[in-house]
Length: 189
Figure 1 (tube, rainbow, N blue to C red):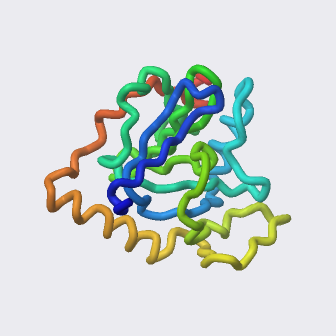
Figure 2 (figure 1 turned 45 degrees about the vertical axis):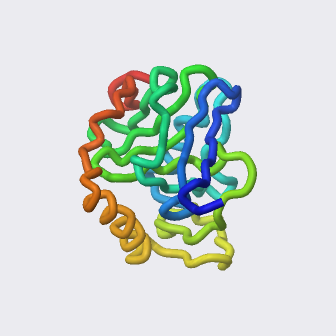
């Protein structure tokens, strides 16, 4: 099967929400930043929620170009969580079973889909990022490159994925994601 024909399905715990991801992801990484740890902890505390973070506190993502992800049919079943009102990221969580589905950097051209939402094989892990923020009790394995922050390789992959979108006129501010937003600081949950 050609690379562009690979279709992966990310599903919530109860199976009501399914998201299609087409082709290969931009990258497979685990993030240890404080925002991912805070957001992950908040979502994991919701009633019946599934895990977001790995036992070491990292959040495992497959990053896809936004034009290669289809969730339009299930968008009404998702709500957005922000760790604070000014956050540039939202975490899309299902209304049915409180499953975290993806992280959206609102001004970016990609969605970071939680790896644990995919069943079966996925491309191998490529890097660990923001390791300077990992918990002090965690020793990371040296199985892939470990970066204190977002590395040059991380940004090179993101820019490399963005260029074809620009050339095809696909770069549009992602105003299409219209999820009800909940923020911990605004008193919503």
